[in-house]
Length: 265
Image (cartoon, rainbow, N blue to C red; front, top):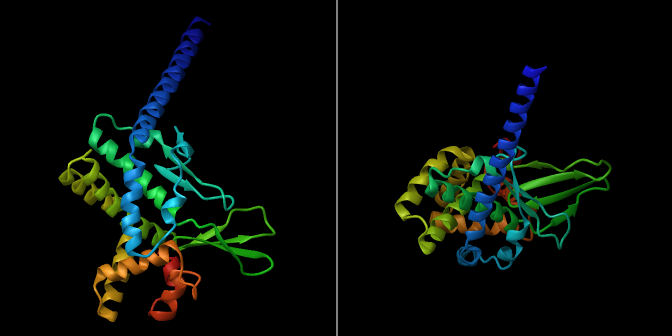
């Protein structure tokens, strides 16, 4: 009985220590998020999007108050929860355990800002555009991703072109993150560039590679600079051209690639 009591006490102490540790992580990451200069992000994004003739994207940002901090693995590092209705701002969820890294403060700050900006870009691209494609099904487009929802079932939409969408999100994020730190001076540019190179190997490398390949292919075919092609993709990402539902649909009609092949990417 005495031995059992000692074990039980040890287990209780371990649980209390874990709770304290989780709270510390929560408070620590929340403090970093609260230092993020959202105005600078908006300015950098607006400048980039203006080049792609996008007018309203930045106004779809998720407010800091709608950032939710989790201490478990419901999400990997971060997640954008899409809008439930036209006036909803959406939500950003951050996994504090995965982001907590106080022994490497510059990398920790970089990671928190990077995932925050990545998820904001998803929010920027979420126009809450829904199209009925049949009596039973409707389609929703967020960036390059297409979700098909069965209206007769109480199940989430099934999204296609996820890797393609994430690859484009990462490339846009790269530009904004680098320019953000250049303007705030929070991390030296050479360290940011080094961290970005490392991140590119680990975060949606296939999606990045595929977008870069499409940009190169279209640049060569139409004999225009790659930067011009990338800006055109930004226009598609933040709102399809009127005659097309999505970038994959456009690409399928203009290039020797099919929507089916893109779905696998």
